[in-house]
Image (cartoon, rainbow, N blue to C red; front, side, top):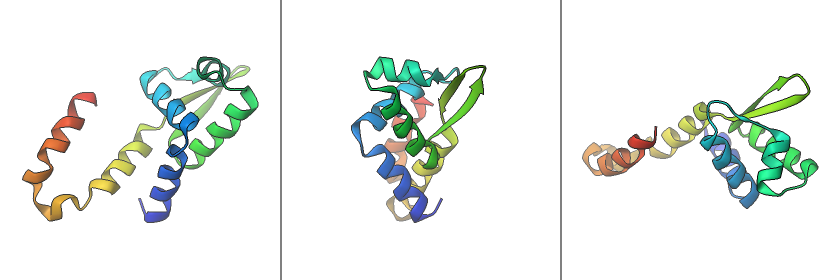
Length: 110
């Protein structure tokens, strides 16, 4: 990941509805959710939700797949992983023991 991609991903998550959407999709991995259901659960108009999902997709944080008449969205965990690794790449100037508590905190969830 480069700076431009990281800025895009962080910018996408720097808006309340998009952050809520991403977190909702992470909770529903690996099945994903239909766009309409995401909009209903977050009480957001469907056209507004479509715009938010498009921004998250361009930032490589969500991916979509058509199933019949529905589009199922999933959190792109590889995109999240790339962002986290980018942010932690130079963690503690190479002193791994200083980053160990942070890494340990992240490990149980994944």
